[in-house]
Image (cartoon, rainbow over all chains, first blue to last red; front, side, top):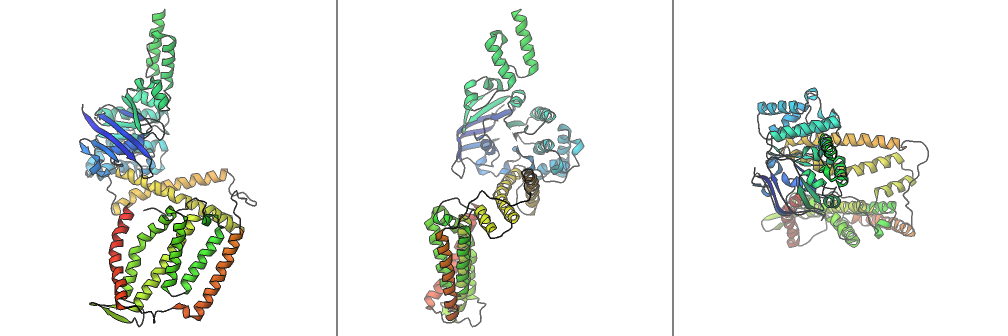
Length: 278
Length: 291
C-alpha cells in the first residue's frame, strides 16, 4: 500500500511565536493504525491539525491523498480526513444521536438516504441503538465520545484522526472503541490516533510515532518503541506495565524472550520459559 | 480581531488607584462633552494617545487597533454631515462642482471627536485597571461584593468562550461544514451554549464547596491603597472640571458652529479626505478584522 499522507519538512509557528513543529517528516501508509504519542506540548495535536488543513505549515508541505493541504479549506479536506476532537461537546449539535450521525454526510453533499444508511451502519458498529433518539448533549461523556467518533466515521473519510479516544472511557467504552477501530481498519480507513494511553497503543495500534519538542524522535512498532528506554525517557513516557514486566523478566531470565502485547501472550511466554528451564 | 483586556504591568497609570483612574476618565469625558468644540475632544483624544504611547507599544496597539476598526464610521460621519447636514442654517460653500456645508462639517468633526475620545480613554482604563482591583476599591465605597464577583467571573469567561468558539469552529469545519450563512449558526451556538452551561454549573458547585455564599464580612487578598498622587490627581481633575464648567458657561460652550470658517479649500479638503478615508479605512478594517 502507498502513502495516504505525506508530511515534508514541515515547520509550524503559532502566532504567539511558539514553534510547535520543527522540520517534521512523516509518511503515513494506507492501512495500518498509527499512533502519535508524546508528552503534552510535544506537537502531536499541531501535527494532527495539519492533516485536515486546520493549520497550514509555516514551512514545508502536507499532502493528503495527493492533495496539497495548503490550498484547501478544512471543509474541502473533510471528505479525505475526518477529525474526532478530544472534547466531543464541541462537535455535537443536533437534537438526536441519529441526526448527529447524519450531519457529516449531509455536509459533504450526500442525500438523506445515503446519510441514513451510513448512520445505521455506525449505530450497529458502535452499538448506539439504545441512545439513537436521545439528545447528544444529554448522554454520558463516554457515550458522547463514541458518538463523536461515530459522527466522523459516517463521513467515510480515507483517514480518521482520533484525538484521545480513550480519555474518560471506562473498560467497556475502551473495548468498544477497540472493536470499532478493528472494523474501521478492515473497511480500509487509515486511523491516526493521538493518545497518552500506552496500554491502548500496545493493544490496538500497528505503528507508533514518538514526538518530543516539536520533532519526531522515533518511529516503529509499539513494542520496539516501548522497550527503547532512551526514547521513552526523552519523550517522558512510561511503557505499559505488561511491557515493564516483560523487560524485567528478560533481564532476569534471558530465556524469557522479551515483552508481550497482552497478558495472555505474556502467560504463554512465561509458560514456555518455565518449560525450557525445567 | 482581538478583544481588549487588562494588560498586567507596573506603569505609573497601573499604579494609580482604580477609582482615581475612573474619576480622571469621567472628568475627561465631562470636559469633552460640555464643550461643543471639536478642538477640545480631539486635543483630549491626542492626550490619551500620548499617554498610551508613553505606556508602551502594546498599550498603544490596544488603543489604535479598535480605532482602526471604527474609522469607516468616523469618516462616514464627517463626510455625510459635510454634504448632507442635519443642522439648521448649514452655511454652504462651493468646492469645485460640489456644495459643502460649514456647519455640517463642524458637527461631523465634533461628533466623531467625542466618539474617538470615549474609545481611547475607555480602552486606557480597561488595559490599566485590573478588574479585581477595581471591584476591591468599589467595595470600599459600598459596592455589593456579590455583584463585583459576578462581573469579574463574567469577564474571565469572555476569553475562555472566545477560545472555545474557535475550537468549535475547527470541529465543525472538520465535519465538512462550510460555516457560512444561517446554517452555520446552529452547529456553532449549540456546542458553545452547552459547553458554557456545563462550565457554569461546575463553577457554581466548585464555588459552593469552597464556601461561597457563607455569611460574614468578606476579606480580600488584593491590596489597593490611595497614594498622595491619587489625591493630587483627583483634586486637580475636579478643579480643572470646575474651571472648564465656568469657561464653557461664559463662552457659550465654545460652540463656534456659526462662526467657524475655514477657506473653501481647507473645508473641501477635509470633506473629500473623509470620503477617501472612508474607502481606505473600510479596506484596512476588513483586513484587520480577518486577521
